Length: 414
Image (cartoon, rainbow, N blue to C red; front, top):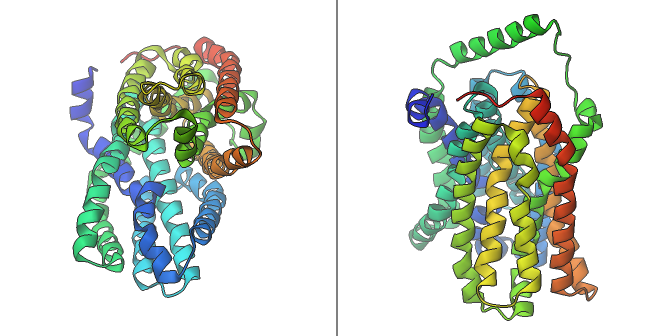
């Protein structure tokens, strides 16, 4: 099926995934940080206090995802998604009445869990599970929800806060999710029972043909699998590195002699390359299989880190961010497709919840670890070149599982 026919035939299910990724941004760091000054003023918090509350909430959500993310393997998608949207609305609503920092922290746990965590999880798992030949294209399409939100939500928040309080803004988000987003998403899932029944028939036919019954795949078994152990470091590398670099971007700019305006103007390059990379990776995965793409997806990140480490010229800033965006954009589509090809789709929720928790933990640690290195007197150049070496090592690590993917899982026709 060509891409346009695929998009038209599956427009409602793709729209459901896109709605999940759009709403997930209400729990993303960039969105919550837009209200940072209001939160600190309301609860008399320093920058450090606010960061500590937010960090603890993020770690708590990562722990819960390990359990909650597995439920999508056993619970009807409509019920699971509905519960997640309700949890997001309740968390946003809690902020409107929070009169103590503890309640704000609880709301943050909910926003991070249901928004940044489980809605993103729902989108990726649903598309990877129910599409086979067009799995890559499906995930790249629904992934457009992230750059769309990043391009529009900050301006909308500025407009809202110009006329309303921050509590009113979060109350509006809660009502929007509850009254509009949730019902429309559920409507997009009409007829899902037939889609799921078809998947079950396909899986049972595959088991009957192979003569093997798929055993339950626990998270313990996943962690012990050599393919998982080798792919995970590469999967974590783009978000880990870019989070640390973004957090300490002023230190990097100062060491390189880059004006902050130059750095700010370079971020659209990162957004643009991540979008292009996501779409191209989806197409390549469907045509060639993830085993062909896996060995090269960290190469742009490695090159970008070397550019930032070795070059001080002004053009190095957009170049390194653009290269980093290529790896970040490819990561979600490629890694989720690799899990589906390697372990099958029946237990994809358990696999994805495990990697989601690891990603949240790694991105929480990245700013801390990089901050310690800077405080210890390690130069920015040394940090960047060391990061490039680490990135290259993870790229070498995926060569064996990529070869296994190419041998065991031939690329699907499209």
